[in-house]
Image (cartoon, rainbow, N blue to C red):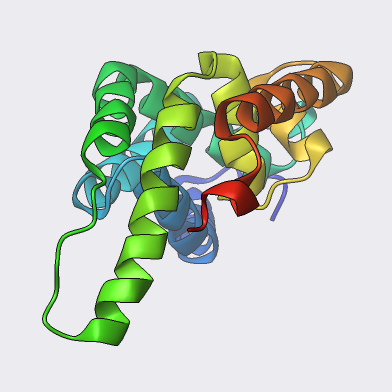
Length: 178
């Protein structure tokens, strides 16, 4: 699966297999970064860009390459993404529900979601990309490096910096559980 075929018919079959194998996880990653409303279109665009761009096996495995494309497309929506995180941070006040257990669960989740969204919005873009590729896509440090086209050590330093910033911004979560 690493080396794309040379004939048009074989290339079509190869791309269909690649799509079938990687669509769900690429779609899930985009949906978690932006929203499920946007994920269908952007995930399809990932594979359109992949077909047009031509996979070069000398660059590494296809999975990180696809995540690199996905991350670049998410970056094009960066302003909307940051506005969304900031809006969640400001408006994640839990709303009253009729059922007490549901209300308590939503209160706890809503408070944490708002704070986390705000904290993520406060990260530098590169740091946020590293955190979300690891947390949402489950990529390894090496795969993140490949996806973003950065050195392995940069992944580690960005992740370390992001963790420190998130701890500073979020503080001790146990103090806020109420």
